[in-house]
Amino acid sequence: MRHLHRVMAMARPGAMPVPADRSVQALTKPDVFERWGDDAAGVRALAVGDNVITMFDVVGEDFWTGGGVTAKKVAQQLRAIGDRPVEVQINSPGGDMFEGLAIYNVLREHPQDVTVKVMGMAASAASVIAMAGDRIEVGAASFLMIHNAWVLAMGNRNDLRETADWLEPFDTAMVSLYAGRSKQDAKTIAKWMDAETYMSGVTAIERGFADALLPADAVSQDEAAKASDRAVNELRAMELTLIAGGMTRTQARARISKIKGTPGAAPEAATPGAGSEDWSGLAGLLSTIRS
Image (tube, rainbow, N blue to C red; front, top):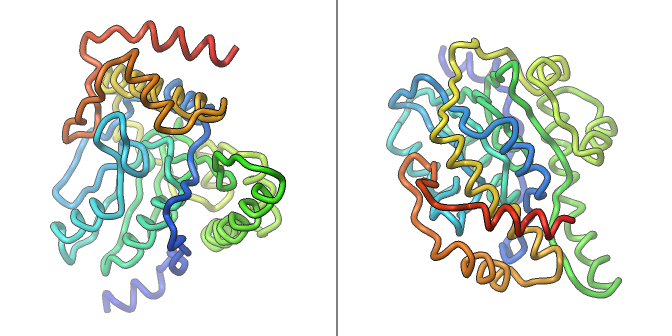
């Protein structure tokens, strides 16, 4: 009977394509990191059970903290939970889109119901992960954000055309994923992705991307986590800005590390500690670069 109920209630579409060559990364744009830092940093759940997977970090391995949400980690957590319903709590600016697709595939294979709760923001790759839920709940002040796969690419017109052609099937697959979940027209979804659309909790429900609002008392603001999230967020945004300016990723990280010092390991809660470090130099440099 439980299996029959799952078949009738199933909201998860099929598996998503993941490139065999993972040397190319589709990333979150710097302005998304900025918005997450302004609107969602430090948002956490009040309660965490033994069947809960928390995603309060970037998607993919994070150089700056040693953390990040990966398919490998999620698969390990699902094995530990076992054959039980699982709750996935998300507050993430996204990150590596292709790692997000892999995490989505891992979650959709779970034999029991998956409930996704968007605590602050599920942007970019994190919005793809959210679609793995049989039920999706979102905070009234939370956001879902969808956009096309975004990469940092260099080369002549032939190189860039080849990159665009390579990316197109993944954008098409994401359109199908969002359309399958929301029942919205695929052309409408594509326009929203082109426009890099943020949806509030109410809008996400109205458009079919979520099922219900989270109770207001299910979410809290952790001030220590907020400061920590924002601090490391500056590093991620600066790295992308330097790369967009022509540096390689290695060069950008070396430049930032020279100012900041050696990146530290993230604590288990995926909230890298800012402690008493002075981030003013980094903030000033980032401001100068953007201007």
